[in-house]
Length: 411
Image (cartoon, rainbow, N blue to C red; front, side, top):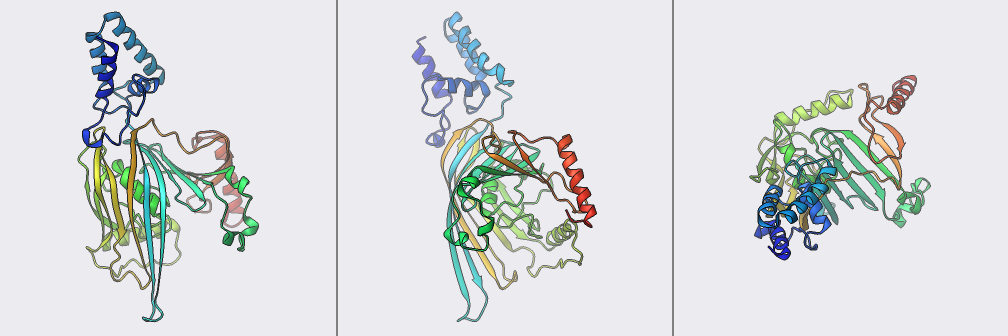
């Protein structure tokens, strides 16, 4: 059989479902290019293209010596990577934008009431599989934020990309602002022990994108509670105070098609008690809500979707706060819509560290039960995080606990 026919069959074999052909790339690469062979060997090409079937095809359909040579070449790429093609994790990359509208309504008489509206568009990229994900974008003003979940730990990095505004430079914070060059050369990395994988203190843009592309494994957990996407989970006592009605796509990944968070007096009280205990509130918390059960608090819906490599993904989605009466006189309404522009197969996410920058780590895995120490900080030069039994980190933690005790419980 002619070489051109072999390569054509290989190319067509890895082409996705017709509904998603415009998004996925076994990209516009040359036939049997190095990147394609590597993708095949690592198993990152769609499930429509079975590596074992390729080997059988080559063994039966071409000259024996030529077929064996190609098989050995493919194995040469696969074996050094330490994986077998059928065992390799599948990852996809999506990129796009989300537009957010925040409307604040302040109480007052008709003549004194005030409404403010703020709009913002963020651009994002997300690489995800069944158990890991990496999400990044301009989620913060003047900076670039990146999240990475490796199945056990959650990482968040933040780097300044723009100079602060003139108003900020003229404010009382000016003495604390570094030069633009210095800010761009620094990378702050937060490390959390988070086997659940939801974002620790992400903002609404990050939380909704996590829900759209990264929440599949979390949604399958027994007893899981979806945190309110429009809240900072670490600073909102009732963030985990809602039951949900979720419809997921019927595939292995299991991303949500629709989500509704619904008020629950029971879950609200449990969330407040748990938060008060962890924060060591000195006074008894108010655990009664003014909102009756059964009111929709937040909604998410995939408006358009496609199937890529056997996984259903949202291409367009909308979300928003549905604020019931009784939540207070000040009312903040957050509405948004997200759109995916590109989808492609990807390698496993690489994490948040960048050894070309000055890395400063805030490690939340080290915290004292008395909350005298919430985290330790240190400079870091590696591209990976050290385990919690690392002698240097333990020494750092012990010294901080000692200082906190000497100061009466304050670090």
